[in-house]
Length: 287
Image (cartoon, rainbow, N blue to C red; front, side, top):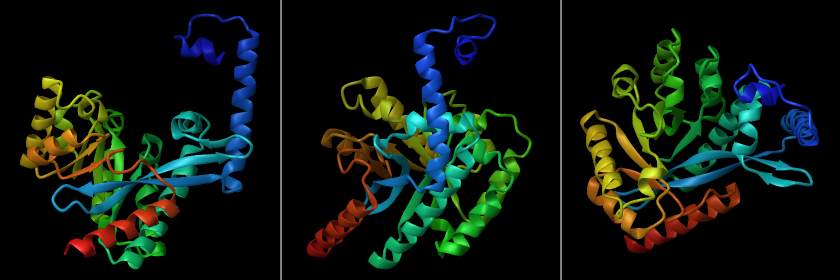
């Protein structure tokens, strides 16, 4: 049934052994996902964001992983779409937001840094009218200042003609939390979104960055996105930076911050703490 729906409804599919495996997989996945929340099997990995003006770590993106018993660490693209389907994405999202804010406040206190955490918010979470109140509760509970939290949303979310979208945006902005538009330039990037919604940061998708400096179109488009953002008073983050040539180009073009394997892949809490120690020593040594 699911396969028939996936293939565009109005068709039939015979039940094969392959589908049997898929059905078992879905059933196991669903049962395990429900258990994972109760048994605390989720982890957060952090990928550092580096400011191009001073080469310092200024923040991180929080990325959920599932440490599945007997299987190991599972990436989000393997389970988040499914979690959305079975209605678990809101509770998982709440767990991630809480844990990431707790950890960020610990780092801010330990290293005396102004450090911002970016947390991905799925469309389902954003449609939850209780989201702004939940964010406020988490900030109060963890002591994290509102300006140290950034919510990353995708363009798909803005395409929904939802009446309450604007009011959710307004409530979040009133808290002092910033909003970043992820994967900019890949979907149906409508420039009118940038006017209609209070977006603070644009993230240039890795598909543009990957082909810099060889592909002239990528170079021109990336420059255009940076110029437009700066004219609109938004900051720009480039993701997927892997080479020194990309770094040099982005610095020259006026990009604000970058994340990518050039500096570090997403790492565990312990490893990220070590990165912060290393960076602090390095900068203390320079100054």
